[in-house]
Image (cartoon, rainbow, N blue to C red; front, top):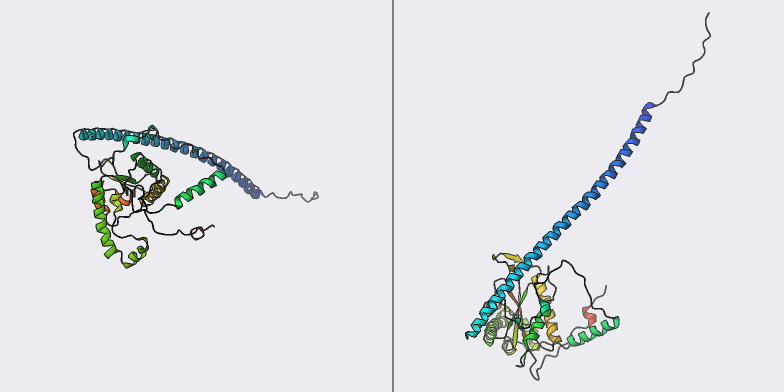
Length: 341
């Protein structure tokens, strides 16, 4: 007997492939997140270690450089002491020292203060202590300084009144505070007081200036300076008690004679000259900036300066002659030289 057939109840099929795909996606996201966290941690630790390593190496290099510099400065000081002893012996024997030593320039060591010791420890950085002034004091000082500089003029007639060598040293030290590219201080200030050397410099300058005025510069230059009453004759180069010859150094020479280039020597030396001119005015002395065109090499040879020094400008230094006259000129107004953005 046939049994009645009941319709079978079937369960709906499950999509096993879809479930597996979703699970794999979730696992991939978890793995990616974990990898990102681990990679970030490793990168941070590596960067910290690298920074610490570089800092320690940099500090060691700086300390080594400072130690080497102090050693060289100490050797230079010893050599300078030996030169001074030798110079004193020559003076005792009656020998005249007409030219200065190539390595040290003029011997102006008579008034060096203790706080100018160049063998002090040079820190990498140190706290800056600015001058603290009220706004009223700042305005007052700036106005007084402007009034003082406004009276500055280029003076070409000098008194024979002597000038203290200590005063000259202070002026040069002030110029030496000037900023310079990489703090390489690419300058040398030659102080000439010997009448013989001043006369030799004047002769080569006037010889070249006569050619400049008659042949090289042209008629336009002569016309442009005619109202200033200047020409190729430069008597002030020998009349002034001192003649400062400013030398710029495009490069230094090490003990082996190898060149070490300086940075922005032209701009750095020009800034130092500007500070020197302001210091001269502040001290109550006068000068005139003279550019010895085409005479630099001859002047360097007269002063027996090394090949890496080039003449920048000449600055006769002294008191103005009694009743000296200067051209009646005017400076441009503030509205003509200043722009505010």
